[in-house]
Image (cartoon, rainbow, N blue to C red; front, side, top):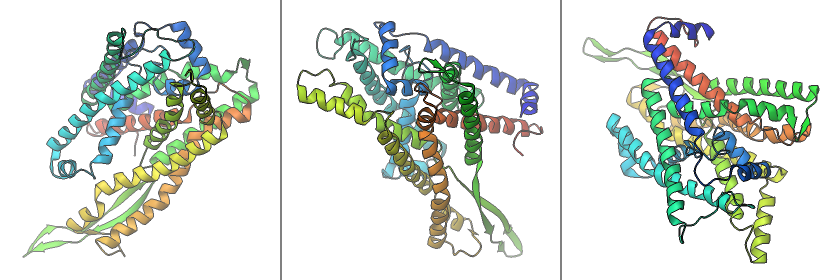
Length: 435
């Protein structure tokens, strides 16, 4: 891998791409330090010490939420919009037609619709986060509301956060076009990596007391095992052999017979089920936070009960989180696999799986194999989701934020980036990282 990086640095074009990617990451981290006006930083830090949900979201935002910068939302509204569009493609005939027959123009139109959907999602999420800070005790933001004397201030803050998200999306697309790797993933990667020093400090000093040498050694070993597992699951695949019939017209062979394989991944869904599950799990607590200071007693008590029930430190929360991750892994994998129409494409191109009839039997066989290998990936993602909680309970470290979900993102993005870097090298006849 290191030799691959060295070879890439010697090529001017690839070196320019790497430097451009690093420059865009510097711009992103500079934007992360621009705090929105009207934020009480001291009260914000106090709120983060008390709210585990905000701490969890802060890890994924790359620390931009703890400073409540103009890019506090990150690129997650765009990711949410992309997921929604992927789910709508098989449902809406117009989108299905664009994805199948639109070619490059169809892809551009679907991407444009994704951008349109990102704006209201970012505005809604930004308003919700501002409302949480305004309703906290003590309030981090004074003067909030769409109806009243502070409506202009509220609109300006929401607009600034929405613009910050769209700016990051634009930077991500620039990285994809002129840099190395997927731009949006690189931004998420950069944000998480920037938090590693603080995460390490939280491991060493958990709950205000220094962790013992045994605890640190055990956590380091678990982290290494988790990374190894992530690499194996990310690269793991079941190869289904495929043969193609030889087509002859007269005395001329139009298409020669050959063999290849269909790679069915163990983890088709990537990190999407984790984002799905955590987005739903934080909704009850987020909604309840609006009513914890209500004047009506039963409303206030109900809000406190919901916050207690959906406390990330509870076993019930983690059990629900595990089940939802497994369920969403199956759901998202089936949605994505269905859109590929592998059995129809094989039949159209004259390909077949040995021992399996073309058409519906091939489709049923592929789904049967996919369900079996997805079980491994789904259970692994579920374990990854609840692993930080288990570590914290086992070693009595309350502030351990070594998010294995973040590790999944970091390792996945690193592997994908190295693959793309290797592809650039292979085009120039270099021996790369992937054999």
